[in-house]
Length: 353
Image (cartoon, rainbow, N blue to C red):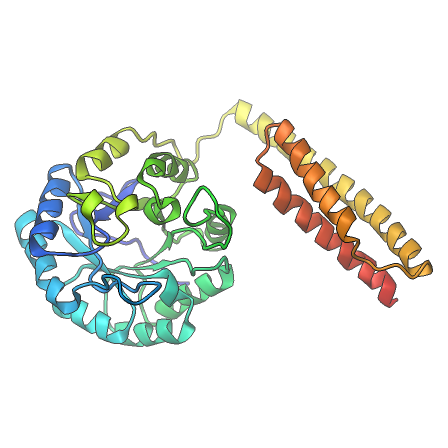
């Protein structure tokens, strides 16, 4: 992809770029009150949802075009740039008409290539920064595809927003971070800015601060955070919004580490990691050899490949052992599910041979 820096007017080019504002533009007073507080605390880019796609009908779905003059007023009175989410070509047209400076495409829209292409076609000939959130489900190719569609329309000031991934399971976070996915995105497109959305990952304001720090430690370029003048009474996503003053406190306490700092000690530690990874690879190969021997035995004795009781025993014991060694249980579960899946694949080859 052919990309340029976001080049936001009046915003210093340094980490982190911070975009903040309420989940929804509820009233003109609420928008202006929040914007003025954020501006006082040094925020340069104001965000507010004008069109709010909700999971179920009946909730507050935004004020639509009626809220766009409020964003114009924010620009006029505070000097901040303004940003909002778009999901259709009509949204793009209206946002451009009212001078919105930055647009982002939401997770639900990213998951629909037809919708993304419609937006891309509308953006042809436009020079403005566009951010693309990850799709609802963990699908890196779908995310990259959406970015490519926007880039192919001539948008070079392009960025990604990591907002986590939906899950049926009840977890600590509203959306699982699955950090390896944006890390892989960065590996594939290193020049693409990636911004973290800790509000949507967490779903809870008390988890936002550590997520912000984690994003900075992982070298994310910025943060997009929901901030409201009266978050407890917000009309949407109240539990994940912060007051501007709390947001300022979090940002002021962030530790921003050098991106490419390399020391002799770090080089030695990396060498150890390389050696351990090779040992892990050799041990996995050894495990697969044993799995193939088991496959031969099962074939000779007409046994089913999947032994459910044995599978449950492996997962439970490995998770328990990993937890005892200070490793996250979910991590251990994912690792051994992947190992078991590969073992099954290898045994199926033997059965089919």
